[in-house]
Length: 88
Image: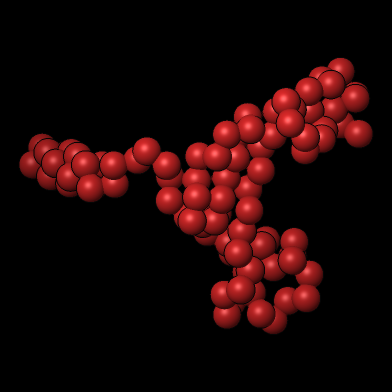
């Protein structure tokens, strides 16, 4: 596969000790129900949020939430910066 072509033996398999990047999506929403092909459903029906994401073998998103992210603090910071830009 691609990992062999790139000469990257740590890639290309899902196994302990390997570099794993995964994105998992739930397809049980109504908008996905008309498509029998899961990959086509993701592309055509517009999956906008991954349920789980793993980067380099570490889960960084679970149940659609970024682990360790203080969403309230981020939203407050965004609000302050947006207000500052509008005042210029």
